[in-house]
Amino acid sequence: MTTNRTLYLIACAAPPARRLHVPIRAAQAMGWDVCVVLTPSAHRWATEDAPGGTDALRELTGHPVRHQYKLPSQPDVLPPPDALLVAPLTANTLNKWALGISDTLALGLVTEGIGLGLPIVALPHWNDAQHRHPAVARSVETLRAAGVTVLLGAPGFVPHKPQQGDPDAYPWQAALDALPA
Image 1 (cartoon, rainbow, N blue to C red):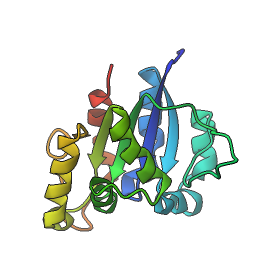
Image 2: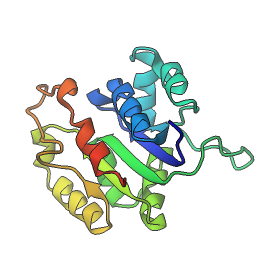
Image 3: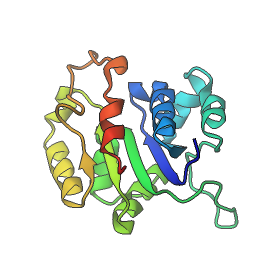
Image 4: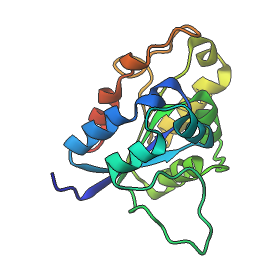
């Protein structure tokens, strides 16, 4: 399928990040050219503890996997995004993003994405104990007010008990369905 739309899949270090092939293939079937950007911790997971690692993601997408800012003298290696999918989104990244903190490439892209008016879909992944922290509700409200589609609650992500999450049940399709057609 020929694509003319680029989707940045920005993944944080949460168990569904070990299954990025699922949303990549589904987004490609929807006509998206997918580029993967990982938080530093997600990159560590991908290089040290994921089947195929970043090489498999690069092969699947046809693009390098990014996880850190490039030097000013280096060229951009990814096409500019038409939309951003932040999934899985951890509570840590959520709270930094809502405060406008851009200390990683992933956060820089999503923070800038709001200002650029890009369509942004965020699919959280955290447990219900983290969910009860007061900063989480404030951060979700802040991002929603800024135009981010945060899929928290059915049919999106519903927090689970600590150590009880099921990465195979992660609602990737709900996030993909929320992207612009």
